[in-house]
Image 1 (cartoon, rainbow, N blue to C red):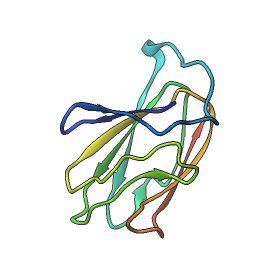
Image 2: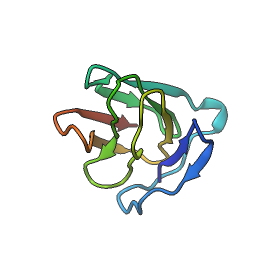
Image 3: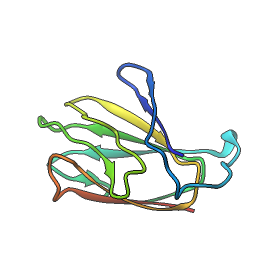
Length: 113
């Protein structure tokens, strides 16, 4: 299951149950961190391929609040105000489409392999 960490408060958030996620994480020494910027009412990059055990940091650079919410409900960053960041570690393979709950035309995809 993805692990969420809100960097601004350093609080560990509990993710929604994720039945579709299973697998074994890569060794921590091989894990990478990727960034998705939220800017101009878009996710950049909006299509990201990462390795098992990698972390994605979502950072909001817009003046409006945003979320990164999986279409299947498997993860949700919660409300990100300007300057807020959330780290999400993917511990299972799969393809995860996501949207912004406030601006549903904002779409992204993370593929974990």
